[in-house]
Image (cartoon, rainbow, N blue to C red; front, side, top):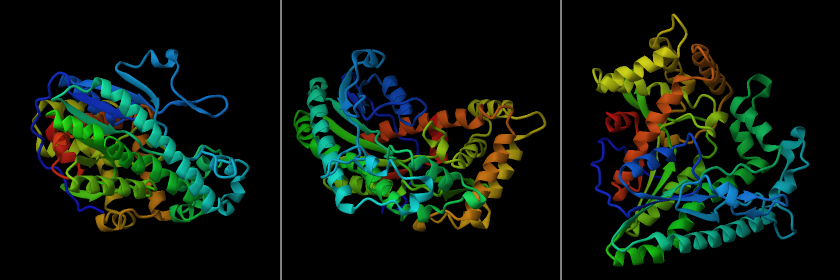
Length: 431
């Protein structure tokens, strides 16, 4: 695991030129971190090369997008399916992990287990498939590379929840279970079902990055010989520095079972950086996305972005605009300080503080800690006029825009192989 290396200053903008490429290695979805990177690259006049993870046909076979599906995607677009993971990949017996688990009932989840040799067989096939698809993707990409230009690879791969019906009901109890419905994350993670997730998360979140850098080595070396430059950036999560008791303090959301895959992603970036490759995993602040809704309570740190604006740039027009916007979505008679009191209540509670040790991260959940997190999340949401219009939506957009700026300009020649983007540098990058 890497040392804690935060970016403290807004990076100096790099003068990208026409013909420089931002290559999205993975599919761009709405309300996600990578949208900020695309916005910043477009401002700089770069060409954005888009990709897809593909789709599954009626027989479960991976396919490229149809012409109709692809017509709404801006060009250039490489229609090579980059789906990662192995949950749908048949093992040596012809049965995929998802098929092994499809008949498991909720009452039986703790006894569900797939022999490791079957998992490894599926894993090997999935990795080989992804490696081949990456090679095909890079052959198509070569058509857009011009001598003397920069190619900025953005690794967008994350996730890997197996596609079988037993998984989500159990995960809901792990992340949102209260009282008798609570399932400790460690119990889940060390189960047979947890083992499937552990291996698949690694393949999707971490191994894809290693395969990208490995397979693009001949292309990278040729670009460099031709006077160009290549860099690789990826999205990590490893806690965030946020304002607690009027000071920046690192805190991490828990339970976060993708954490081990994110650590492996960091390790790959460190490995390639030692070989002279411009590579960085940027551990970004929490935001509210379509995929993060499962992790209720993760959004609590987002509210504190307002406090960083107030502390560092109290009179800036953007600070006033953000505070006005945030206040406008709260119920009549509710003040921003009412929200911050609840945030502090969580971050200063013993149950939470014991989860906020950088050296111990990632940590598994406790019944009391999860109940407090969910309870305070509910209380803050209840202070809003409309539970579907939270201040975290606007704040999340600000964060991913700042992250996009940092990951493009610092990412040209990264300071570190693994770096943290805290609320302080987010604010600097926006004002």
